[in-house]
Length: 289
Ligand SMILES: [Ca+2]
Ligand SMILES: [Ca+2]
Ligand SMILES: [Ca+2]
Image 1 (cartoon, protein in one colour):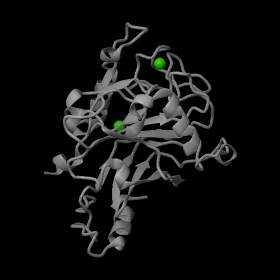
Image 2 (cartoon, rainbow, N blue to C red):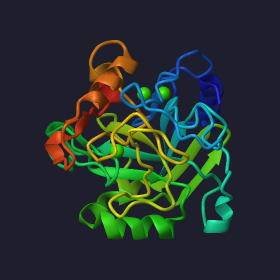
Image 3 (tube, rainbow, N blue to C red):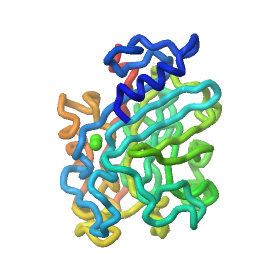
């Protein structure tokens, strides 16, 4: 959906609760408290710059190219929208495995709601970390897997942070957009303009390694169902695209992403947290001020 169309939809929600400075205009910056609308560059779905899609034909170009991210407060619920670069399909018939109507994409939406608190390690299998002063407090998992499967994976592999993990009450795909609806209470309240976000794009792996939370591996060489361009160990970021933003350094978002994701210890086969790439938290409210 084009930003203008999206804006028009928000505008049509209208009324006292949803005031927008730009209704009918060209801007996409909504005035709804806590609302977020960010764009991400096209064709940076290559992690640190050199990752390659798996070879199977289901992984169509643009499938993991993050293009847009929206946070839409709606009363007691919050809708998250993650746009990608190609139409979202369901080649593996997700209804047969209790899924959500798509097959390939997976997104981890990390949220910094509480300065000075939170977690700096990402979900198992993603192989990145956050800075101490940008620790995440909640993560919304957009997965094609049904909630029973996602919750059992979290219980098995991320039990120490399970109270911070939010499996949406609704997860679906529409066109090129993944849509997730969560209760605001699960986020600790309605979104604030001070919150930070990082969206890590991954691919749903239905048969993950025991250390990986439904994430598809990045190896040295691409395979039918493996990304290439990284390493065969878990030192490389298993992140295909993410938000970078000017906050991540420089005006060039692609370069900022490539630089951040390229800073990992390439020599180790048994990485500790310090060996992993550090990804930035993006604070859209601060940027607008
Ligand atoms: Ca992108
Ligand atoms: Ca790897
Ligand atoms: Ca990006």
